[in-house]
Length: 430
Length: 112
Image (tube, rainbow over all chains, first blue to last red; front, side):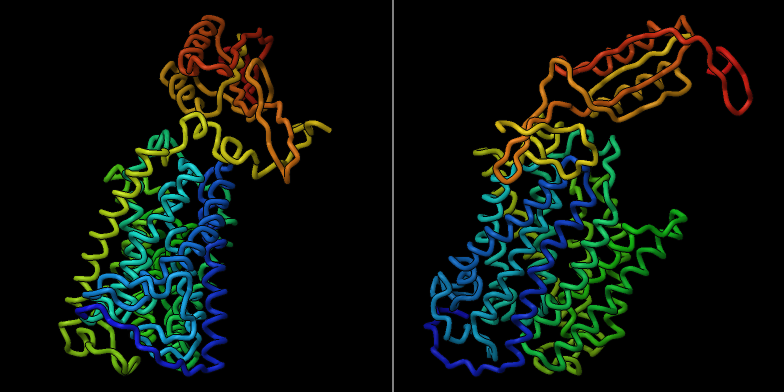
């Protein structure tokens, strides 16, 4: 891609079944973010659970609007040059009947824009896990707004848009191994370093307050991931079916790998391990779901669960409080899955790909996959560091120490998550 | 024997427990309580209606010690729980008539 491309106005042939599946998938992926709120909310202390939940819900609100106004166009608008960024041609969701540059969609472009909107939402929402129990509410939303424009949209353009420079080199990322998982993992590391550790971490035990909540959230994420991965076929046929089956098998393999390993290492299979392993398996299959067969999906899921188990303890050695392991789960399993696309991708599953993986004799693919990983990590880490520092130095990203001690729920939001007694509050002004 | 009761800020529990262990106490009991002193509570808002929450969450620590250790234990708790801010809590000492270890039936200081 070189000079600016004048958008070609092509009619979109709309298929009813494909449209129904992509719209339904948009709903499934939307539901992942409230699921994430519960998944994360259960892993923190009672005094901060509402702050976590509202941060996720408000991220849905902010990112959806930023996406519609500008970020969708930066990601999927006609290429502005060299595959680096989209133009503002689609800003404000303009030209909804015009084929999206580089695609041969059989769904209305607005269905595609809505589906991709939910990806931007959950990727930004994942960062709440890195700043848990200490971020200011409004400041996080400003950070998320800048982040979607500066970090998410360019990477989505490079990798997801066929006109993007990494996609042009043959990089394969079916549903966001780079764009969602590695991106959020590298960004989580940067923002966790900027905002600093929670008071008392890691000396004090900061344990999950409700693992049943976390398991419910993990179940919602798993359910929503069918839309995430199988919806990324952007059609309701054989490829979506393969992606859905691969997604299921990888989640199962991730769960079993994590629980099996921790049983060997510590003597116990844990519920949090089961949830973490399933999510790590889902993360690992995300870039691969539409390129690999079912047995490869099992291997990829197991690899994701295994690597994440070890990656989650790195924060104690590194001294960074990535509170809910965005780096360890999404970053690490995202890297594993993206590399393994370069091993297992096959035209037997997806005839549309240019390069096959190592087992089919091609070495090129794993090389460009590695390039995409490095580029994504460098861009996401650097730019997130800059944005987070900017917000921290101006309005402050971190909550006051007194609010952190009291708990963000009462200090920032004037609410308590749990009230099991009858002695607590009296009504004012009645 | 004396019962030392302390009301402290919840986030100071770890510091107080570590300091008491270092002092050499044999055990303690902790409960989550709520109450008020000079520190005021906070306001909560539900669909526009404001509620005053008068009672502040606190931690109550109870330690039974030999007579000679009471002042020392009080000193350890006061030092470890102090932040200089309002709401740091109170420590008081009360006499204990008898104490029995349930498992062995030992009585008095032997049961500590």
